[in-house]
Every structure is written in structure tokens, then in C-alpha cells.
Picture (tube, rainbow, N blue to C red):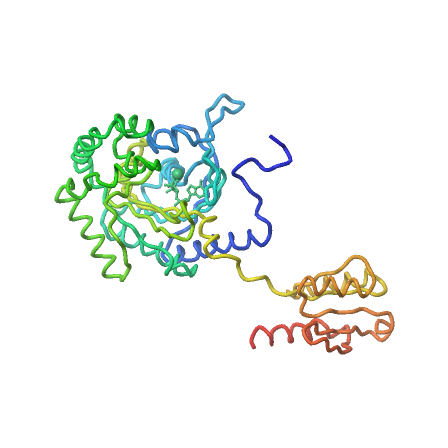
Length: 418
Ligand code: ATP
Ligand code: MG
């Protein structure tokens, strides 16, 4: 451990990266707002129980990935590994059952102790939505449409595939559990050690295994579709029919299960081949029993979460910020600082170099990609004027200091318009 390095799996976002990151978040917030979702900000840590009880004690997140610690009061707390459990907890603690349906958007850091790789971090960020209180498959369609529109808005529509499956209702899953157990038991000896344990405790989990050998066995496992009750099959048909109606393409992936225990009926993922092994950019599903399981009133829910880092890797750099105006003092630097301040108060991005001769300061202005330089020479100052240099064509003119702000504002406006 070197304490001057960031903790493994965490990283600093320098301005260019944070711009790409914030653009993903802001786009998600604005697309979600178009669908009537308001933002909820929940704490970054919760009592460990909030996650342990809901995510399932056989899920990878709970068995291996949680950052859990005992605080000074002796409480067991966990840095949130995902957003839904905290939102469900907030729903119960705030007595929001009176305000259904409820549409909530969230964004922020999540923490999982995983093996760091490209696109897999220990502190990463998600944006997500939860729609609570709507039982009909139309809710699934709407929430998936919101995800599709977000990916479109980020320019990723052509790069992702929507994969869809149904986990059915409790009766469907009980039937499937039997069929799957019968199948997997024949290959018990070839399964990974983790999956042999999963087979005992929660065989569906085996379908989500990342082990190569497990995946080969799973490839021929019976699909859950054969075990769906007529009601669950009808629900799924309504979801796929709704997506068809809205023109949202998808493929049914009969082996898609989600990594957490609380899902029922619809499960979906948007995947890409552009990120190597970490190809899932957005994932979600229906969780009708979660809130009741936590001790709240039974409230159906559906939602998804997307990995901001993975999306930002796909979108690449965000547009550069506005080009600045460089203020270059030749005489009194304080007078120059006052000019820069005047520009900034008028909404113009202004930069001021703090040292060096004219040549050095001009070089710095060019390096900052400044559009104009305002040069405050002593001779011009005596006349109440400055030199304004166009750094794209290197033309220059003298401008009265009193009119500088409006002159520059007009030039910059003209550029934006043109
Ligand atoms: P994976 O199968 O990749 O481990 P998951 O099923 O654990 O994903 P979810 O819990 O569904 O992931 O989280 C939703 C999204 O959050 C993922 O699709 C991914 O984009 C992102 N995500 C999850 N874990 C990480 C991580 N450790 N680092 C970066 N992004 C992540
Ligand atoms: Mg995972």
C-alpha cells in the first residue's frame, strides 16, 4: 500500500473526464425529467441490513463485494453497492406509500469490492430510475423506453442491444428452480466451486456466473420461458408488445437473470460489444416483492441503473467549454485583474496570466485556446484603451476600455450565432 496512490479501483476524474462524466449524469437527469421523474438523494451509507436483507444472501454483491464497517456507535454500516435498496428504504421511512405512483431518479457513487479491470471499479457511479406503485406491464415499457431515449440522447442508440427476459412470478420461479436444479445437478462435478454452492442455495444464480466453464454448461440449460405460468407469460407478452408498439428493438435472452435477488417478471440489460468483457451499460428489472420484504407495504416497482463510467467511455470527450478571453497585463497587474473580473461578471470566460513577459503570456493564451487577448499596455492605458487581439487571425485593434465588455460580448455572441 502506498498512501499516495488512490485506493485500488478508485480514480480521480480530472476536468476533461469529469466533463464527460457530468454530461452523462446531466443527460440522464434531463431525459428522466421529461418522463416526470424527480431526483432523490439518499445517503451513501445505510445500515448493512438494508442491503443484506434485500439483495439476497447468495448474490455476489452481498457475499463478496460489500464495503461494510462498524462505526463508533457499534452499528454495522455499508457503503451502498447499488441504489434501489436505499430508495426502497427511503420510501418506507418517509411514508411515501400515500404518494403513489412515485417516479424517482438518482445519481451518485456506488461501492463494490470487486477485482478492478477496465470498466469495473470499486468506487463507480450510477444513474438510475425507480418507478414505484405501478403493477401493469405498461410501466415496464415506459421505464425501458426512458432507458432507450437516454442512450439515444447520448448518441449510443446504434451501439447497444436491448436484451430482455422474464423471471416470472413466484410460482414460475419455483417451477423453474426445479427444472434448472435437475439439469445442473447432472453437471455438478464440472461446475465451479461457487456455482456448486449456488446450486444448493439459489440455482438461478448459476445462470449469472462469470466462470467460463459454468457458462458453457449454462448455455444448454432449459429456458425459464418453459416454466412461466400463463399469467407471467401474458405479462411478458404485454411488455414485448408494448416495446414493439413504441418501435424499441430488443432480443429475448432466455438466460438473462439479474445479479440481485429481488427481481421478478421483467429483467433487461442494454449491452455493447465495444467495451470488452464489461459490456453491460444499463440494467434493471421489476421488483414487486422488494418493499414488502423490507417490511414496508407491498408496493410493486421497476427500475434500472446505468454505469456512468462505462457510458462515458462510449461517449468519449464532452464538448470543450467556451474558449476564454485572455487578459494580458503589461503594466499594473491589479488593473488587469479588475478587467478580467468585469468580463466574468458579464458572463465571459476570462483567464489572466500571473507572470512572464508579453511573449510568454501570449503563448499561454494560445495554449489555453483563448479566442481573444485583451492586452493592457501602458500607452493605451493612458488613453483609456486596450488592445484587442483576435488570436485566430492575429488582427488587432484598439478598443475603449469603457466599451470593452459590450464589444467582446457582441463578438462572442456573433460567433455563437454564426
Ligand atoms: P456486472 O455483471 O458487470 O458485474 P452487475 O449486474 O453487477 O454488472 P448492476 O448491479 O446491474 O451490475 O449495475 C448496473 C450497472 O452499473 C452495470 O450494468 C454497469 O454498467 C454498472 N456497474 C456495476 N458494477 C460496476 C463496477 N464495479 N464498475 C463500474 N460499473 C459498474
Ligand atoms: Mg457485478
